[in-house]
Amino acid sequence: MADLTASFHFMKHFLQETDFTLREAAAVFAHAQELKHTRGRGGPQPLAGQTWAMIFSKSSTRTRVSFEVGIHELGGNPLFLSRGDIQLGRGETVADTARVLSRFVHGLVVRTFDHAEVQGLADAGTIPVINALTDLLHPCQIYADAFTLAERWAAPGGDLLAALRGRKIAFVGDRGCNVANSWIMGANLFGMKISLAGPPGFDAAPEFDALLARSGFAGGYEFTTDAYAAVRDADVVYTDVWVSMGKEEETAERIRVMTPFAVTPELFAAAKPDALFMHCLPAHPGQEVAQAVLDNPRSIIFDQAENRLHVQKAILSALAAAR
Ligand code: CP
Ligand code: NVA
Image (cartoon, rainbow, N blue to C red):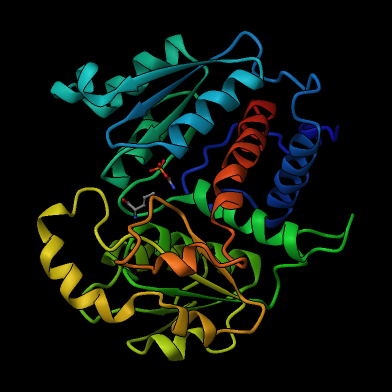
């Protein structure tokens, strides 16, 4: 098993895709591949003796289970803290929460609404923080997705990241959501092209463009209101729910304006003949995507879900190696 301490020297957080350099991301992907292929055969235990707290303010199936299982498999103890069960939910400050938890546990995995909260926990604490989804970004999802594509496209034993370069991803639907934002950042980091299609008026939050610019990727995406234009020559067609967690009050309006952006069999057929379909899940069949597309042999939705485990184990191992 490769030694991650050679690649990671300083304590790090993983709040956005660019918190790892391309070289560090390559080490994470290679490690994820080794962990995947050796799972269940007594793998490394870099979290032995450690407890990682998981503060969740939103629902989760994949992220919660993959982190709890992953921390356990790396020898650590996952401590799930629902926001409502801790004083943060009653108004204790983010900074004090970070300072107190830093005295008890070795790292934080955080799912919340406001991106500033994960940043605040990272800034005030003395332990690594992993972003497990905010309203702005979902970087663990995009690393797992990109790994899933690299696994498919790289030659056996070949360079995983090189397999992504120059490929085109089309994101159709709620183009301003956290997964779309994160894919913009990931596509720029990994040297992919990204085209997004969605209704006008559902752009990314202004803070996203500022964050993208600070990462050196200002304007690094194409946007169109024509779903067929977006998927032309695409290697991947990606969608996400139209109503993200926290947006429930806008449900009727979102369904009305996003219906023309559903991924139907016809739209999927307009991408490259060997294009893959991806969705971070949970899906709403019949809304953002047709059941026939979810069931298509070129749909890789459950590989994406499985790879959350392997890639997050590699991310946890990298952050543990860097302390
Ligand atoms: N894709 C994803 O993050 O799923 P969960 O909301 O179930 O964690
Ligand atoms: N955009 C979705 C992703 C769920 C994994 C949401 O935030 O609800």
